[in-house]
Length: 501
Ligand code: GLN
Image (cartoon, rainbow, N blue to C red; front, top):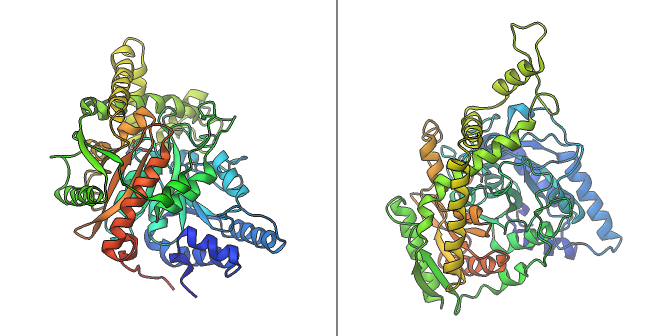
């Protein structure tokens, strides 16, 4: 039999539907792969083998009984540890949440379960999803399957690495400034940030509520579309959830036709700050889509030069408010100052937050609290919100003339672990091409575009809000053109990992 861990979700879905394999076999294959390689990769913070196999058996029984099942029923999945999972510890990569077992499921998790998808476990991330390398996790870094000495991107490096290392066919990520797309780019996987409000945020541990969006991670564009369809749609428990029909993303991923599609190359999302290898792969991708019949023009979005500055005010401000609930009283860690015998509530809070938050989180909470303080609010948070409007207007203007925008996903490929850890600014610059989409609420996809010095590079497409289907069409088309060149998907070129016995 073919190696089930290497099969796409679409292929697994067919094999399961025909009865060629059981969900127990598929799920067990993933669990065995996790046991074999995750000691090296550390994509998972928790592996929930027993409950995954139980779900698998339930799907197999339902299929045997002739029930009509969802297309991905029986296909296992990994979930970023930023989503609440009932009965499974959820940490968001933070020490302050160590030991917290949520009493409820996030809406997305509920939908995965309702679709019959066994949950393999929870994946690693930068603490509270703040970072671009997964090194800010309180539980140690994740390693990139392409080279275990380099980072897997962040904050969702765990989900991307799990999919790239064939530990899971699919994963869930969350993207506040690029945390699905940049890890996808540097691990040779596919990642989508849906339109803001397109997927419920209920049960996602909030980082910055006006930017956060949950989305799919996969090895192919079609697989991402199949997963997107499971998790998308209105949820009354999320007040920002869109109450509109989800575009037909699966059909778009199958269409994969660039003929007559108008593509804008954003002048501001390229150039000098981008690694030459990234630019080379990007230019090749542009040549391919042009040859495939797309109508490619250069466009300018002048406000994007302020996007990073605006993001790093909006995000810390909202995070300082969202993370105020970690007060030592309600969740996880609680400790008093060592030298005080009967500490006050304030002393317990201060001591717990000091011990439970890492440096990057503290840096952003201090910045955000300052930016929101009276007297500074207008100068910082208020100005950042104005920049946000200008960015949205730039998008509106260019989308009057083009269907999708195209840029590199990240300015560099993956770098050695530790190399940027002491330089927050260098880490923040990784987000340069991904954050405009979050600031404007529009969707984006990252698709593998080849290698530079043996490490993956991603190309990003952006589309107007609610036009997520355009991303799937363009992404699948580029994927197909590249696969013709390579004789398969890029991920198939990933090096074999040492397997533990
Ligand atoms: N790198 C970005 C940050 O550190 C992305 C965060 C995210 O999307 N969760 O804020």
